[in-house]
Length: 253
Image 1: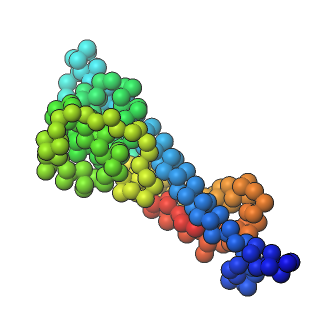
Image 2: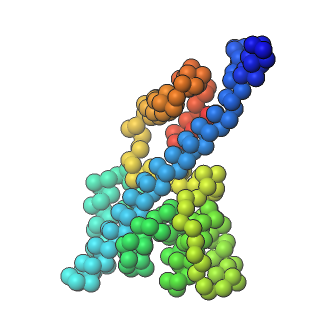
Image 3: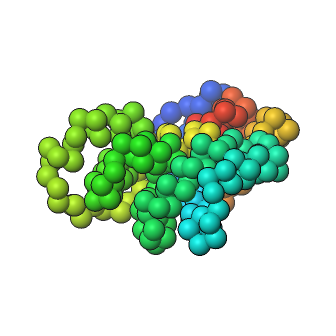
């Protein structure tokens, strides 16, 4: 009886020949899913702050131009001053500041921007501003992109093929859920260069320091998950177990 119990509790061997629990694979898969979901939530949080910042900058420019008579040239001056103050952020170029102004003008409702619009990367926002002038259509494409996890190229294709007209003008009751971690939209959120600019992860930040910090966070997370975590502790501290790309901050286990 004892030998049978051992066989059911211990199945595969690891690289060193040590037996692993039968539930190890499902435990590892659960960890991967939770880590990827946490990555996506973190990326969405950064993206939301960036989009809201751009909206507020655009709103302030728009308000001062309307109420105080500031001319269009103020944007060029503002771009120069902000670029000098934040040289690692490309988002303050004059062209992008004009997009911020148009963005705030297109979406005057801050709550709608917070809850819906800010789920898409800034690159998606620019494409929608360029290609869709009707407010109802803009909202429809935004919600569709979030729900379906569209990449920027897919979004552009759907707009150019007039998907809104082909599927009817009525807005559907979309589920306001996060895009699946494996969706194209999720990948673009994680890799969005605007988010890295916003966080000022420039050349002064050494890759090994970032890698060491992220590995430590992942290790601490797994150590908190329970008694079975000791099976992973040794592998997590190895760079061969956690591969981190500085250009994407996306790691796999």
